[in-house]
Image 1 (tube, rainbow, N blue to C red):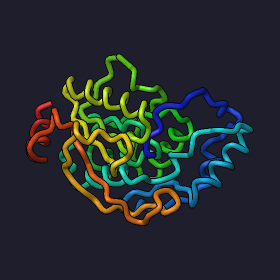
Image 2: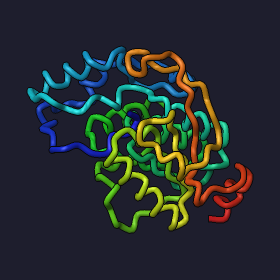
Image 3: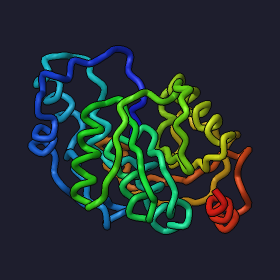
Length: 247
């Protein structure tokens, strides 16, 4: 998905010394369908790139190249942020499980004071850096798995696209988001209804019809929502923006 938060074992990625060159050679710069003002490096198909990565590294069973696609949740969240810039304007923002960096880039374009993109996949962080350059924004990349992190890092806003696709990761991600919301962070989630989305704990704030790749989603348009944590949700965007302005 847009997020790549954990893997079962460390990967030997050092065998591809120049990840930026690998990404540039195996993807193409394209505007994001729902967010055409942002251009990112994307693959035409998932499986060939996946196999190419395994071939170059010489290791089988690698995680899919989540970073090489604009997933539905990330597209919806990026569109929402750009259309409601008051949600991130002047704020510090975390793009959790950032993948391509699309959501973080959108936050910078919407006026965030600083954006951190977090992903444990080194390819994702390289792709996010390349995509940021293409879109004339600056982001900070963090390779740490933040979900169990009890550090002092705090952000005004946390954005998470497509993170509820695997049971254990979904549970850890929700706990992380809730902990940060308790410390005052505003949390926005982009998700089309993945298997482990905790709908009963969320409130839908917007819906989008997102153009997606049939190769990935078995459809060309995916209905996708932006969500807030129900426990911390305000009545509307005006109240949310007012709360953020007070931070």
